[in-house]
Image: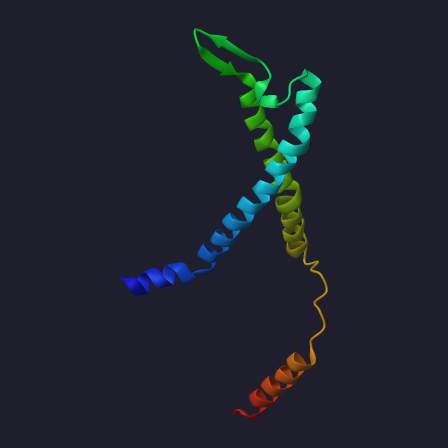
Length: 129
């Protein structure tokens, strides 16, 4: 049972997914800070309020309705989605396009250690019958 779990965890896609979640969360916090610190105050200034969540707030029978809170959540979502698309998705799509066409970036030159290991590998292959 533990062996199967270990194999599941050690699969590349599970590790990649975990890394993506952590990076995505950190990136989301950066974009949310940008939206809350710059974009929302600009929109709130246009409407004359101190915070966008206070825009179009009204009360009916002691129930408070806030259209601004919905607007704030929508803006946060749109800016996070746009930032992820333009910073992560679009460049990866361009790279995949290049690879599909066969135009890959030039590989970096081998280091001295790598050259030596390549020569050793080639020499070993020549000595085998």
